[in-house]
Every structure is written in structure tokens, then in C-alpha cells.
Figure: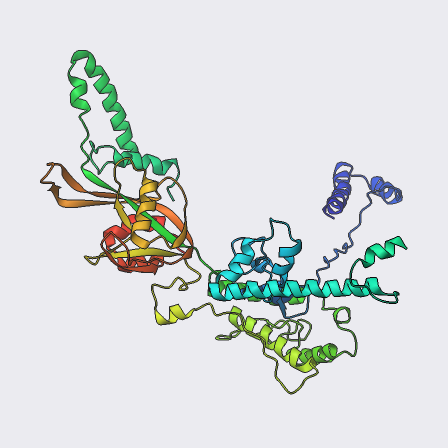
Length: 185
Length: 337
């Protein structure tokens, strides 16, 4: 835009200088004839387009920890409440135990699963220890016993199911050695 | 803050025995000192006994203390000045005239409850913006954009209140359940309960300002925690030990640097003479180390430095608590805000 303006100005100042140098009337006539000249004088106002700025509102942003601030935005919503941001992200709060991924293992099912199928490294993680460390040892022992009993019950149930599957389609279900019988047939 | 090499030089000049007059400025002292060395070097050629007399064994005539300036950073932004409020408000109404008009159809689908609610509100307040008061940039009275005396429109609290009110009324108008009223929680107040009660021990007071830990000695003087540097200890180590011995270890702190940020010189009227060794002390020099605190709270219950009370104070409150002479030394290392 500024480039255009400077060019026009240069063109506008040009004829004045020529008229001062050459005083005769014939020169001015030749100037009017020279319409092919590119930088001919033009004095109309050029249209400067206003930059398109969208309408902006003031919005109140409330972060997840309750801190709030005002900012300008195109969104017409008066309040924005964020649920996930830097205030409750573990990446920005590495020391917060509240944000740690702690699984609540009330019934001891996860512990029982780990006892059976887990590797040694996640069998006794410190996370599980901290969750149960608040309780006194008596309840802990009871919990462990319950978890063991439940694991045993689950195993029995699983055995029963296996029995049922293997016994399907046979006339008389035999309690022992049924798999070997099936293979021999 | 004089924590760079300038501060180090000042500390060095303070630690050096004061052979020169204290009324002479530092740069002049240095040039005079250099001239002295030159003349002393010239003098050694004539007299051999000169070095012994020009460089005597330095006796520590001042007790060197390490002090801790423990600060809690500001928690919220500062309050705006009235002029700033007026300026921001003027810019908002000016923007109303210059920006493109709000394109409602882009944000609200025709016939929806939100659209109906929006139309009703626009008729009331004459403009899409909620925080500029009753003003329409396209009306015939658009020129009348100045606030009257005593109006609250430029106040940020007023603007927040208007935004929350608007969100609440929208939630009530567009919800299916008309029986219960929707409540949108307001932002927390900038003035806390500790401010209202005047609780100087709370860290939740004066949220927009920096707070500093000051302790009160048994004699009743307020000061920053400080104690003498024991042998073979750096100032920083001494400052860390001082903090642990005075305010307890229940604080997550971070010492900013290895150079002191300021100093305080106290001269006794008469030099104290120790009966056992015969050494005389003319006073004490305290060097303050800057420290930030993140969490925790000061606890004087197990202090070993004869302290009876502590307070968290801002700079202007410190001026009211400490002696004027002490404040003149420490004021330039404290942040105004």
C-alpha cells in the first residue's frame, strides 16, 4: 500500500517541475496530448480498506484449580471452564500424589490377579503399598486372606467351566482322564 | 539489585580492613588505595622494613553474619491503577466502533433456545459485549462513550460479575429443568481471610505482593533471620544453616545465588572486648542471601537463635517494623511488589 502512494506522489510532482523549466505554452499542450504516459497525474482519493478485525468479547477463563483471568476472544461464551489444563496435569505437577495414576483396589481383585499372573516387578508396587499403608495390619491380613480365598474360588469356578466344556457332547461325563480319552478316540 | 560483580566487589571492600575513611566513595577509595600501593612500592626501595608496617595482620574487628531474605512470590496479578482501568475501558468502547459487527448467525442457530436468549439480552444491553455497559456503537449517541463520575463499568470486578451473571441467566433460560436455579461459582476473592483478620503469620495474605519472613528477637527487635558465620563456612552454607536453625526445616526453599543481595552494618558505641581472648569487636556486618520459598511454613518452636515471633511482611510493612537505620540498609534489595 505504501509503495503505491509513493509512486503516485512522484508522478504528481513530475509535471510541476517540467512547467517551471519550460515556460512556453506549447509545452503544456504537448503534455495534455501525451496520454500514453504511464505516470499521468491523478488526484482522486484512493480507497484504503480497513483491516478486517472480527468482533471480540471479554471472556472469563477458569482453570481447573479455580484460578481465573479475563481475556479477549471471538467466542461469545461468557465463561470458559477448563477441565484439563496445566494445573491438574501430571506433567506440570510431578510431585502431586493426587494426580498419580493410583488404582483403587478395594476388593483385592487386582492384587489376586497379580499374585497369579503378574510378573515379579509389579507384584508389589509401591503404589499398592501406599494405598494399603494407611490401614492397620489386622485389616490388611484379613484383606489378604479374603483375596486368597477369592482367588481360590475363582480357580474352582474356572475348573468347573473347563469340565463343562470338555464334557459337552459326551454321554457319561467321566471325572478323571477325560482329555486323554478324547485324544485316543 | 547488586547481585553481580558489583555486589561482589562491594562485599570484598567491606571485608577488607577499613584503612580509609568511610566518608570517601568507593571508586575514590580504590584509586587512593592503588596510589598507596604505588607509593609503598616506591618506599620499599628506600626502607626495607616498610612491608611489615603497611600490611599488618588483620584482626576481625566485626562479626560477620549471614542473613536470609526468605520471600514468597506474588500469587496473583497486581491491582490496576484507576488510570489503567479507564484506559482499558476506553479502548474497549473504541474497539466496539472499529471492529466488524458481531456475526450472530455464525455462532447461534436460528430458533434454538440459545438464539432466543441472545436476542432477548441484546435488546436489553444494546451491544454484544457484556462488560462495556449500556453502549451501542451504531446508535446516534455513539459519540457519548465517556463514563460518568462514580460509575463502576471500568472496574474488573464489575466486568467479572457481569460475565458470571450473563452465564447464569443463560444457563437458567436454556435449561430443561426450570424448578431449580443454576449457580455458577464466582472466582475467588483477591482479598483473603488472612487479610481481613490481619493474620501476619499466614502465607495467604497480600496475594499480589511479595512477602518476606521477619523474625523477632527476645529483645523485641524485628530483623531478617541471621547468625554469625562459623569458621570454614561459606556465606551460603551459613545462610542455609541459619534458616534451618531459626525457621525450621519444614519449608521447600531455594537459595537464588552465591552472592549476597545486600548487607547491613551495625557499629557498637564502644567496642566489645572479649574477656577470654582479649579480641575486640566493633559491631557486626550482616550479608543477606536471597531465597525463595515454594511450600511449607515457618516454625520457631525449635529455634536455637533466641527468637520469639515471626511475621510474613511486605516491603512497606517491613518499614514499620524494623528500625529506620536497618531499613535504610535493606530497602533496596526488597521488591516493591
